[in-house]
Structures are given as C-alpha cells and as structure tokens.
Length: 419
Image 1 (spheres, rainbow, N blue to C red):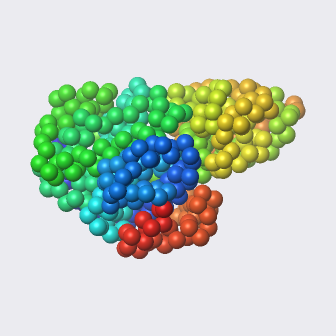
Image 2: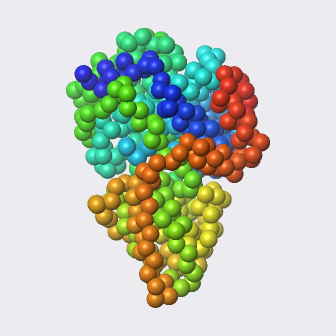
C-alpha cells in the first residue's frame, strides 16, 4: 500500500484523545506565536500586499481569502521561529497545518472542535510524510516544514471540505506539483514564508480538487512523483496504525531554532562568570551543523540559528525565551561576540538529534552538562510552561482567553482573539 493510499484512508480517521489534547496545546502555541509575529513590523508590507476583503481572519487584524489567509498566517506564525517542532522529521507541523485548517474552517463555518480535529490529522500526516521522505530529503536542502507540511495542510483542508477519496487523491497530486521550500532560506524572512506557502498550497490543492481539477494518479509516490524527484527514501510509516507521532511533538521554550534547545537547557545547569570563560566545547548531532551553526550572526534572525551566539547569551544571563533578545543589537554586541568566539561546535554521531553535551573551561575549572529533549514532560508541566510562554507573548488575559477558546466549540470566539 502506498503512502498516498494511507493518507487517503487517514484523512477521515477517528482522532486519538491523547494526541488531540497535545494538538490543543499546539493551537494555543500557534496563536500566541502568530500574534507576536504579527506585532513585528517586518512583515507589514507583505501582509498589506496579500490582505483583502474576505471571510478569514488574519493574525493581528484584517481579513483575506482562504488561500491568502493561510499564506499570511502560516508566515506570521513562523516569523519568530518559536512554534512547535517534531524531531522525527525535523519540521514545524503546526504553522502550515493550523493556518490551513483555520482558513478552511472559517470558509465553511466549521466549529473549533472540527478545526482542531482536522489540524491533528493534518499535522500527523505531515510528520508521517516527513518520515517517509527521510533524512536524505532534509539533509540535501529541503525544508520539511514546507514540503511535508504542504501535504499535512492538504489533508487537513480535505477533511474539513469532506472530499471523497478520488478528490483527496487529486488534492495530494496537486500539492505534489506545488510543494517546495529550501533550508537555504534559514535566517531570512524566506524561512517563515516557506510555512505560509505550504499552508496556501494545502488550501489551494483541496479547493481545486473539490472543483474538479485532476492531477497525476499518484503525485507523491508514483513515477516521477515528489518522493522520487526530491531525494525521498520511501521509508515505512505507521499512518493509522495507532501510534500517533503528535503525542511527542516538542513545544519551544526558547525563541530560536529547536536544534539549539538541548544546549540551552544544558547550560541552565551551569553557573559561571562569563568573564572567566576560556573555552566552550559543544557536541551535537552532525545534522545540526548545517542547520543552526552560523558562527558569526549579523542579524537577530541569524542569531536564532547560532550555537555560538545563543550559548553566549545564555551564559551572560540573557533570557533566550524572550523574543526581544534576538535582536540586531545583540548580534553586534561586542561582549557577546567575544564570548561567542570561544565556542567550538563539533559533531558527535553517538548523540541523538535531541541530545547535546557541553564542556566549559572557566577560571581553571571544567564544567560539564548534557540534556536530552526526549525526556518525558508531564501534561501538567507542559500546560504550565505553555501558558507561561503564551502570557509572555500576548499577555496573561489573552493567553487565558485563547486557551478557553481552544476548549470550546465557537470558532468565532477563537478568531475574535486573533485580531
């Protein structure tokens, strides 16, 4: 059975209660990150150029058509690179999928409950497609958030639109000829745009399929399909077999690339005077060296992809959970630059992609620490940390209101809070 057939069957599958509970957290996280992203002036002209009178709410205010709302919201929710990540395929599942699901849900007047169910099925699908494509696809330069995310967005939209199997097949085929996104955009505004393009792709593919547009019979796994032409490995997956990948999604508590989070957590275990630091040796999984190892970042955006810079910030007592700290000013701060220059990063293939090890020499003393992001996090701890994060991004009252709206059925109540 091909992955395309599996995705068609899975589109209308019953949802898992535990996975859905985690998805509700991701919807809250998406909204908080998106509203904070919308508050950044960098994307104002982009939003203005794509907004128009329409039925769908844009993060931060305004409306647009379903396709353009998905594009804008997918971009803004990933603008700060503070949204959830899944390490199974190294991608951000919610930004593309929730943006697409929300746009279609508003388009057809669905409930919040239906929107979250569709987002869960779509996010799960994106992770599974990412696993099917494999690490070669990511390592050669494709951005899984955008490529696998486009399929997740398509599945979410198809579920809400109640497409039949033939239409779902067509939608996946149409997505195959549009899905795109390159890692070369990391550290620029092009990276969040990748998420927006994936969200728009999913909405367009599903709407076009519903209108009768046809495509290759199997644009994903078939001859000259997306997998064959995009370095896909055709790995086995567990779609619809009871194991839900979204139960192990990782939410960010540092406002930077998730590949840096293990080292930042490890550094919390070390207290040292930064003025006495002689050297900092970071060991990480080899894959991260091509993702978040900018040695001398020039901008706040580039700081989000730099072991050296974030380590220097953490050791200097700067809160890496505060988005404002990833600024052009800190990128140019001479004291931080001097400390960052003492950071050496090497690959260690004995470490998983969620593990990191650090050795600091300071004042003649050696400090050692490690961290594994795969360590289980109790649901109550996740709730507390996410509400605290959301409060830091949008304020206590709005974060509580958003969380309440995620647990109720009125989509209007939820979208009213996105202005």
